[in-house]
Amino acid sequence: MKKILALLLAICMLFGLAACGKDKPTDANSSTDSSAASDVDDNSSSAVSSDIENVELAKEIYAAKRTYSGAAKHSKRNLNNTAYKLKNKKELKVLYFGGSITAGQGSGSGKGWSYFTTDWLESQYPNAKITEVNTAVGGQGAYLGLFRSDRDVIAHKPDLVFIEFAMNDLYQGFTKEQSTVLAESLIRKINKELPEADIVIVLTTDKSRLQLNFANAQAYKEVGDYYGIPVINVGYALKKELDKGEKNWDYYVGDIVHPTDAGHQLYADTVTAELKKLLPSSPKAPTNHKLSKTTYISNIIESTKTLQADEIGANSDWNNRKSRGWVESITKFPKQLAPKNKGAEITIVFEGTTFGLLAEIKRDSTVSLTIDDKETVMLKEKDATNEVERYVFDNLAKGKHKVKIKYAGPAYFAIGAICIG
Image 1 (cartoon, helix red, strand yellow):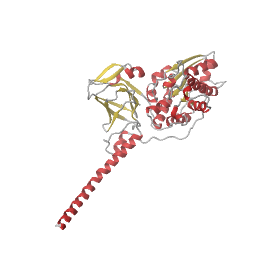
Image 2 (cartoon, helix red, strand yellow):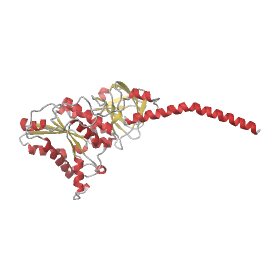
Image 3 (cartoon, one colour):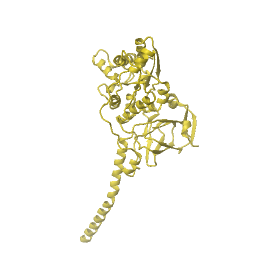
């Protein structure tokens, strides 16, 4: 009997091993799927579902891993064109483009660093007519900035542009690579449309990063250095003042990031101290800034298209209505798309390397986006503000792609615009 039992056990073990052997290819495929998802996540700000069959499938959607050109290739530009227009043409339009710090938030007087900077320019060039345009939007990073630059930068035809987005890129959760793409794409777009315009990058800080050159700031610094664009780090100036021990953090900053009147003045003083060095006393006639054909990072966003609600081409499952809430107050788009019922879907076919969404979503809402019928991501709100301003699919392979947006309810969701680059 014992021999029979032993024989039966051996047979069972044999079949068990065979079964395990048959399972190994499945495990291997599962491992490959996990690797593919991980690779995609490195190139995208979105979480990746498990429906990717293999690495090759992912390659059909995404481009190769981005590469960098190397060290800085251009000496720092001065602001010759700005100086010439101030001294000889006696007029200048200066535009400030960034987040809430540049919008002046935190200032009790309502006068931010941009106001004090323009005021200084007027004091230095009293005979020039200086027009200030401030199109900064609180809480927004360079993704929205890039896609509203036609309306909020280029349409104004400024002579001098200040860009400040690194801090909000960090808060938006963008990686250094994504900030590099956004910074370079924005600079190249402005330069293409306004080749005479001078550009200055401004880097700010917050309470937890006083001693760190955080990754997003590094991205802007590297892009600025590559093109020779001046980069002014007002965060370093704030740290130097605090290190003196004469004033504490609360004197200069009212919360963790928004300067008080004293902080805005300090930031402006730091900017104007650099402008003194950058504005030549005997400027030459303005010339066009020529950018290298080789980009600093590969697969940048070469062109941008912002599809507003009227342009998306919604079906009967969606209601095209007047904007409200975040879509209306922040993006200023007149219309928005809202689903009429659970299960509402809309498909967008586009050609480009990035797909983004400007939307408002309540915490309990479920929205999925599927690209090329192969990968699905779930849309999440940004912290507790119910805003979405972000990449959804990034570093795509060049060519046509299809994104299906599906609303499963139950809470509020509305699309302000779709951004394609």
